[in-house]
Amino acid sequence: MTTAKFTNKEEYLQYRREWKAEYKQLSQTIREKKWLHKEFSRMRNKAMIAHGHPDTHWNNNIKSGRFWEYLDVMQKENPQYVELKKKYTNDRKWVELYSKQATQMLEELKEAKLEAQRQYLANKQCQEAVMV
Image (cartoon, rainbow, N blue to C red; front, top):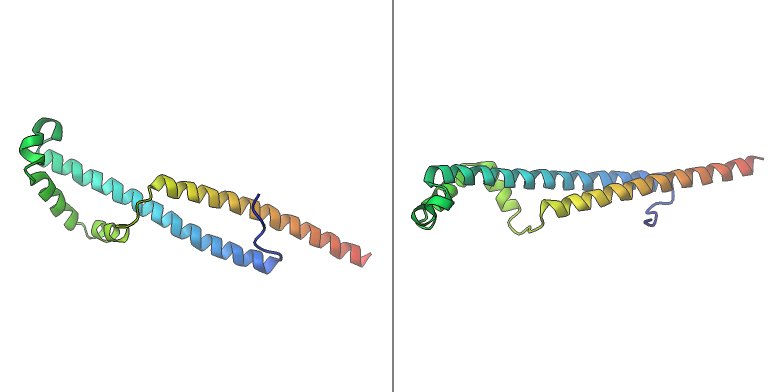
């Protein structure tokens, strides 16, 4: 169990706001990287159809560069693809690693909710004891 990052309701609410912002960004990254991979595969398949499948025409088309030239042109014609490719140029993490991180964040949030509930009940008992 992770250590509580808050000791009162205000700190817990601040923790939740920060967690939500971080999780939202992580989810967006996962979606973008999945789309980028899917789009590259789609373009690659179109290039293979246009210039021969690598298994049958490897020497004539793939090595000659026509395949790669065609693929390059297709990529440049897709502005969203170009933008995301630039954004993730130096990012070598696979989607699975991001997904694992998202799962860990969800577990952390679950533990934080339990801790917040525990703190709430403890505080409530203290207040009731003082009133008696």
